[in-house]
Amino acid sequence: MNQGADQAVRFELEPVLNSTTNSILPELRRYGIELKVGKIPHCVLWSFPGAISQIITNLVFNSINHAFTGIEDKQIALHSETDPQSGALSLIYRDNGNGIPEKDQQSVFEPYFTTRREAGGSGLGLSIVKALATNKLKGDLTFKSAPKRGVEFAFTLPLDIRPKSP
Image: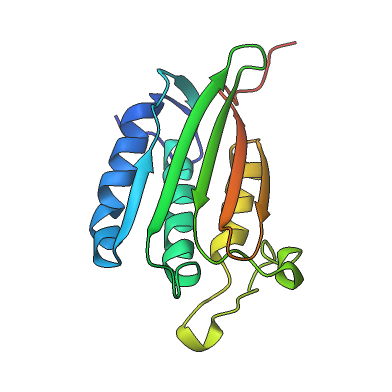
């Protein structure tokens, strides 16, 4: 059964997160980064599993490319929980890297903004993350960062993005 990429499907969160994190573990090991994944709630969504996977992958590669210069104990943490009241999934991504300089924070989601152009950065990673989270997954995205305190991206995603019947 091949579902089109533009059609929401029913899926469980845990296998999608496990598959995504397993696929990026070799790169994390290569750079000496520890991945900590919190307990994943039993959660069934009607949404786009590929978009969730792409968001996590983009964030991890963004951390690899930008966060850890001069950091000894490199860590990325992924935490998720569901809110039965709002019917939403909360997905939190954190790294303990250098953080995003305050002067760059208002620009991080702009297409083509990068601080690493000389190293091959395209500036598309976080703009894609935001577009996927807000447009494709119909959710919200916030982030906070401070120098030497890493970064945190917090996603609030509906469990069911199918249009509601009147």
